[in-house]
Image 1: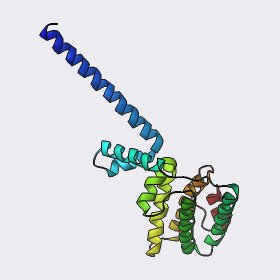
Image 2: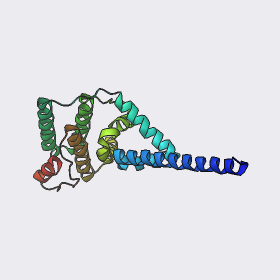
Image 3: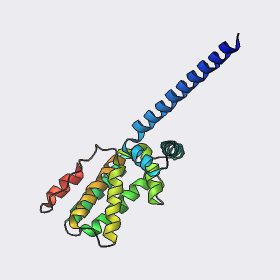
Image 4: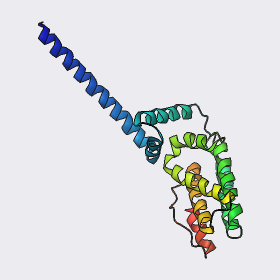
Length: 197
């Protein structure tokens, strides 16, 4: 082989290797986007680079695989559903307290399923692997709950928080997704209907 042929061969091998690497990276990216949905974009926006965000998401998958998640038995599922029904009834008379109780009930359910319940950001990271589609709801509910604890949330905000909590709650129970609509503030049955879907 002449020196020119060797150089051309090396360049061809390098180009093929670069294309193969790009295909692998694109496949991993597509897989992460499908698994994490809107959470993928949220993490990319928080990180310094897309590759750092993707490392974070792969790390979440690794940590999630180490968890011993527990499916709910039918009795527990029924108990939680009844607790949510009672919570919704109380909302009409004491919305501020009920939002705090909703936060506690969701945290209790998260713990019973086997997820860590320490710091909120850690909860989000662990939940994101299987419940990414409802994390936006959970973040919004948590933010309203924090505002409520400072006395800064309106009744309408509190209604929204309950609807948002219900989205993750239903997802953790294995129910169909909740339509995130705001209950009519003058009709307690509407609040009940919107949060039980």
